[in-house]
Image 1 (cartoon, rainbow, N blue to C red):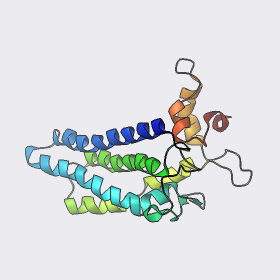
Image 2: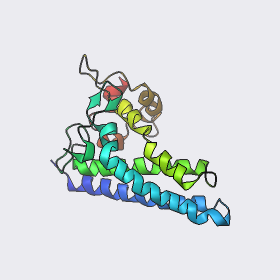
Image 3: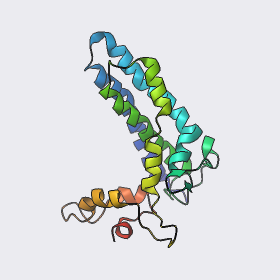
Length: 197
């Protein structure tokens, strides 16, 4: 069942992350020579366009689609086939599947935008476009990190050692509390007490 409040929160959060991408262009534009300011800002805007199309065509499916071989998602959701207004049974069960896809797309967009700070003024625009199109290193990694069900036993298992180590400080910290509510909200099937036990 779709919860309107949860949906609004996720969409507002996605919009805020989307605003951060052009803001990065202005931030990086302040660190380059005057002649490269417009190019740096334009790089961030082109990343929004290219990654948006790539995410819809195959990126979301590779990152969050049904698991293939424990490393990458399949192409069942390519072109957003099967990604509709009904909540996903695997991810975010209180918001539409499309809202979850948009939320994750914003992070797929901002990741290469963050990377351009490393080579501002030192890359040609054509090379940047090739890099962006070929950029899909984060998608198999996402699938690997988020696929936590042990295929043999069906229990939350195995592949979350990175999450265990990085989130343990938050989940067992008496000052912060006993858990990250937003983690349970965004990825409800990965309940931290189950994962960390």
